[in-house]
Each structure stands twice: as structure tokens, then as C-alpha cells.
Amino acid sequence: MNDSLDHLTNSPFTGKTGFENLSPAKVTLCLLLLLLAASFIPFVIQKSNLLENQYGAEMVAKSKDYSDPEEFKVLRVRMNLWTSGLTLPFLALLFPLIISNYTGLNKSDLGWKNTGLIPSIKQGFTWLIILVPIVYILQFFMVKIQLLLPGENVTDHPLTQLADQKLLALEWIMLFFSAVVGAPLLEEQIFRGFIQPWIMAKKSGVLITISCAIFLSVLQFRADWYKAFSLAWGDRSMENDSQLQIHITKALGPLLFSLLVSALIFIINRKNKSHAAIGATALLFGMIHAFAWPSPVGLTLLGVGLGIAFAKTGNIVTPIFIHMGFNFLAFGMLLIQTVIKG
Image (cartoon, rainbow, N blue to C red; front, side, top):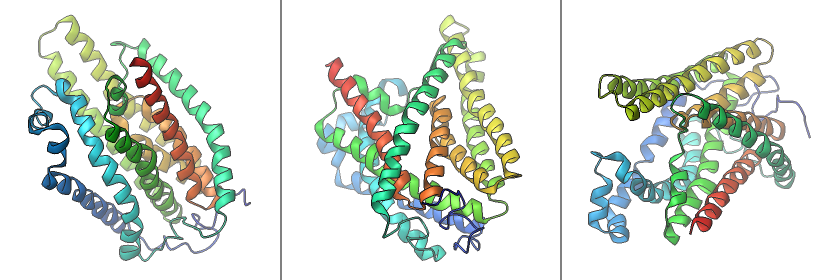
């Protein structure tokens, strides 16, 4: 096994990879086409009245009432399980077809290999054992630090709110297909199979990618800063003051983290393009979860591990296996927590 991170699959320094001629515009087009395709399943769900048949028309109508988002947030999350559980696996299967039709790349270029499957899975299992405790320990300390800050609030991922709910059996199945199957299959093809090798093949790849990551953190900053500003000009009750501090922390956290990591990636890029590409991809991967601060910190570290694992094996199965294992563990803990709470 080649221990170099300059693997043939994702390094322009060891041979032609097919990514050299891909412009940022074409990469963006592929991702936009994927985003457009993502609207297909929700359209089918809506036209088939699937949710109305499962929950009733009245409950579906309530889930669309955003006048009191907290009251119906969990209801929306439960119903969205159907969308994500069906859409993510669909997009994971569609993504290689979009890439091959619009870029000329094939499945092999994205890391899908016909050989070395068992060694890649073994490598993935080793990485999973290493990454799980490291990421969870880091996340534990980040949560503790967050609780020491004004407001003492940690933003839960929407799915963690389901621990207090009695989900239907079909909802658990949709959650499994969404978190354990669909998300790893789709995200690893996009981030490790497509974006990471593209960054390595393009001179401006690192700059473009971290710019996108910072942009996502700015969007989150804008959203939470607006909420903080609204509270500052509203009723200055003790509860509102606490919420004000929470939104300020949520606004500044992702932005400062993305800027700090970006500076580090720039320094690394001067010495090793491969390492910088892995870091930039990981940062972008973390920042798509900026809404659930401080989760992006642990997820960025996880992304680094996934990127290194892919670079070492050249087989996309390795990071997919790791990602699936990581999400399966979270899924299992959520299920156990739900059973304990009765």
C-alpha cells in the first residue's frame, strides 16, 4: 500500500487525473445540477400525498406554519426524514452519472475501484477506530467550552432532537437511509472523490475552496447576527439577553474558526499542496454544518481523517466505510437514548 498522500487517484503530481481541465464554472455547474435534481424526490412526495397519508392533512399543514418555529420544529424534522431518506441515496446514485456526462470523468476517477475492496475496508476500519475517540473527545471539550460562554447554549443538530420523540418504525428506517446510507455515499463522492482531487489538480483550488467555506460561515454569521441585532432592539428581558449572547456566540464561532483554519491551510499550502487540499476539503465539509456550532470543529477533524484515508488508498470505499461507521454509531446512540427515555 502506498503511504504517500500523492495517490494516483487524487494528485496531479503523479500522473494525469482528468481533473486538470475542469474549470471552477464546470465544477459549480455539476453541483448545481445535483442541487436541481434534489428537488425531484420532494416533488414526488408532495404529489403522491405520502405525508398526508402518514400524518394526516392537519399535521402536515401545521408543519408548514413558521409563525412559531419552535413549536413545530421537531414535527418538520420528522417529516423531512422522508425527504432526506429518499433523496440522499437517489442523489448518491445520480452523482457519478452527472459527473461522467458533464466532465468526462468516470467512476474510477471518483475513486470507485474494481480491485482492492477488502484492503480498503480493512483500512477504513482501522481509521474508524482511530477517528471515533479523537473526534468525540474533541467535540466533548468543545461543548464544555461552549457551555462556559455567555448564554450556556449548544446548538443541537436537528436530528438529535428526535431523541425525545417516539418515532414511527418507518421514520427510523428513513433516518437510517438518510444518515447511515445516503449522507456518507453522497458526501464522500462529492468531497473526497470530486472536490479533493480537483483542488490538488488546480493551482487556485485551495483558495477557491476555503473561500467557499468562509462564505458559508459568513452566511451563518449574518443569520445569527441579525437575530442578535433584533433581540438587542427588543425587550431586554433576562431571557432575551441570554438569547442575545447565544446568537452572538453562534455568529462568531464558525466565522472565527473558518478564518483561523484557512490561515493554517495557506501556510501548509506553501509546503505541501496535497495536505492543504485535504485540509481545505475538510474545512468546507465542516462548514456545511455551521448551523450546529460547535459541530463544525469535530467534523472538520473527521474530514481531515477521511481525506487522508482516501489519499492513502485511492478507493472511495474507504472514506465511505468510515463515514458510515461514524454515523451508524451516532444513529445507534440516538436509538439507545430513545429506548432508555421510553
